[in-house]
Amino acid sequence: MDAEPTRAAEVVRSGGRPADQLAGLLDRAENGERAARHLAEVRSALMHYCGLQSCRHTKGPPRRLNRRTYRHSFLLPDGDVRVLWELEHNTHPDGLVRHAVFTDREDLALAEWDVDLAFGGPAVFPEPGAVWRPPAAAALPHQGTEPGLPPEDGEEERRRAYTEGHSAEHARRLLRRAANVNAPGPDVGARLRAAIAHDITIVTRRSALIGGRLVSWSLYEHAFLLLDGSELSLWEIDHTRTPSGAPVCEVYASRDAALDTAVRRIEAG
Image 1 (cartoon, helix red, strand yellow):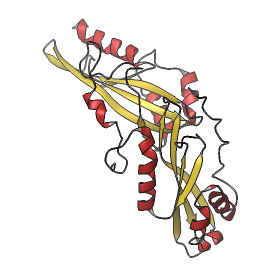
Image 2 (tube, one colour):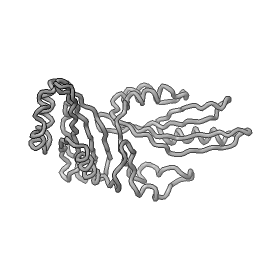
Image 3 (spheres, rainbow, N blue to C red):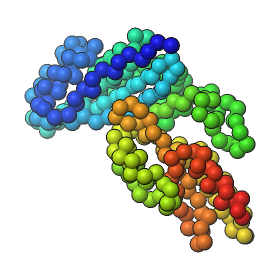
Image 4 (tube, rainbow, N blue to C red):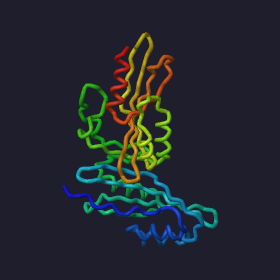
């Protein structure tokens, strides 16, 4: 297996003069010269803001793949806002990071579609904000004794379609509402301050009649993409195994720990 190419230095997309940000965007984009012909008025922009719109990541094999889409908003002197999209990815065989800029959202969608084929899909155009999963995943045999659970790590390549949405704040709130004393500690919270996107997946649900009362629990995976390209998952159990029947949230660092806790509560009767 070839070594993964060295990741290019992170591009600074905030701060500075809007004209300089536009010049940098056009300079690094492979189609920047062509796009510049339609952006003369943007050079006089008064303000600039850039945010991560969506991203996608896989650890491989054969190597780590990344795709990020950034939304650049330029405030013009007449009060209008001009939006540009920047596509960054390393899906070509040489592994080098490439950039492209788009002024039309449909052109961006087509380019993302083409780039995402390197991840193994999607087979259809995704709805805006939808979480993509490989089409064959539903047909894969489940392993272990718990029906409805995904295969263990290593049995299926994990692919995610992350979306931006105040991910570091989401992680902070998730840990804050955890009721269990053995929830992940400050070290995990510190790492998650660098979260730039996240993906929430419901893994399984269970219910049982205990003492004449219906008790239920649900397992969620909260996967976070960090600034350095690494991933970190937290596992949330929502259950009603409480004296009052009120729902409670517990958070664990691993799926096994979360499942073990949930199953033991149900089996305790």
